[in-house]
Image 1 (tube, rainbow, N blue to C red):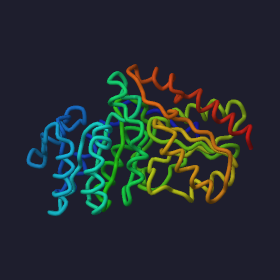
Image 2 (tube, rainbow, N blue to C red; image 1 turned 45 degrees about the horizontal axis):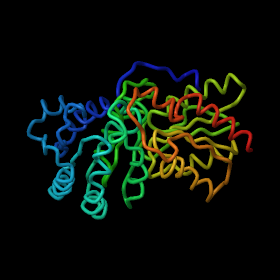
Image 3 (cartoon, one colour; image 1 turned 90 degrees about the horizontal axis):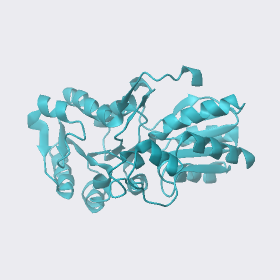
Image 4 (cartoon, rainbow, N blue to C red; image 1 turned 180 degrees about the vertical axis):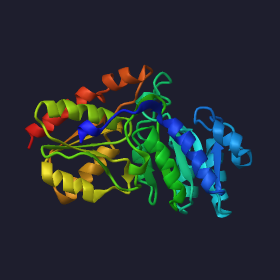
Amino acid sequence: MLSKIEVTGKKDTRSGFGDGIVEAARNNENIVALTADLAGSLKLGAFMKEFPERYFQVGIAEANMMGIAAGMTIGGKIPYTTTFANFSTGRVYDQIRQSIAYSGKNVKICASHAGLTLGEDGATHQILEDIGMMKMLPGMTVIVPADYNQTKAATKAIANYEGPVYLRFGRPVWPIFTKEEDFVLGKAQKLNDGKDVSIFACGHLVWKAVEAARILEEKGISVDLINIHTIKPLDESAIIASISKTKCAVTAEEHNILGGLGDSIAHVATKNFPVPIEFVGTNDTFGESGKPEELLQKYGLDTPDIVAATERALSRK
């Protein structure tokens, strides 16, 4: 199956969101877009042009944006809020908890520029705690797509899902290797069938995991590779099926290893089928300014790091 994974182009995942929201809006007149002075960064140009009456610029007032979005749902609207991931969560957590999650409002919190790959803007913008923050909110769905196509598919899919959603994507140009039709909310995507080790990844690190799996296959290590694009609700059956076969696992995410995908996988394993697990992610640290690929290397989130983690997991079987 690894040989069938082909790069069909390169594009930033935020463009997948920008294109996806336009298509979603064409099919549902209740979809509206709100932004906190970042329409360009969130690729809302096409939406603004086609649906000017459904576009709301609230200015640099993220907390107000969340309150407005919550109120709009009462009238049947489906608001998509847009800003950087840091400002979508850390700056407005109280408003999300009280006005959106607690009352189950149908708000789609769309967060770009997540993780280290935001790059040169540095630690104050590179949030690495947001997956944990959002998945702990009762009733919140959390999605971290792998590439442009999957982000576009997720953007359209959440329009038909009733309830609050956190959709996390990024800034850098990244390989496109999935198909839109393969995205199913809440269902893990099997990218390769293997028997020696399970690798679970999300977001930009899915492609790094594909690269790692190919290196490992050359070494004679058979990898069960799974894209966990939906962190919550988690596809527990897919996780259990994989680890019960391979009996060891690696998780890879552009996020703190505390509270993210790795913690979710470990929780499922602990309850159902305990196995050795190695975690690839930032190790309880903030980021810094730098080029995206260099930051991934420095903080241990690159292809060789996944290979090394896999070898450690195998040694612990």
